[in-house]
Image (cartoon, rainbow, N blue to C red; front, side):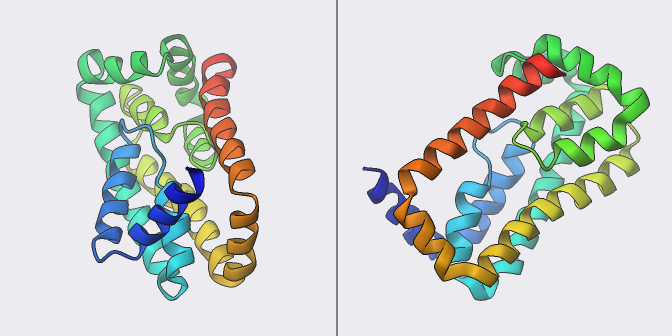
Length: 193
């Protein structure tokens, strides 16, 4: 079943609406959606390496715009929508500590957390809830999300076929590692911050 899903995603990655769909996923993931855009970014770049940097650009821009939406949720709607998102992920206590850290380390929190498996949506909502400087939030988001997506795209662009062969040989293992990293990000956020 995993092989069929992988082949389906690779086929979808070559679809004419794949880039806008990935942009939508990237936007939504930065504010409330649980699935990271990497799920589409990787197969799309593998399917069309010539567009690797265009795909990374769309992913970055959509993620930053989605981050602004998440920031707005935290800034103006934290008591309703923001609180619901945070409770949905079971991160209430951790978010309070995270928000408190923005006074002293806000820029570093955005730069570091934007690269990790810790859900970026929680960073964006916490930034807005803490009324963190919007200009700093935007440039730090561009840097961290751009670094993440362009690094993945550059590696896939440069080493596409060997990486594709590696992924296809070890698909089950890599899927489990990705899920463990994703869940680990939520757990780390909940218990460490």
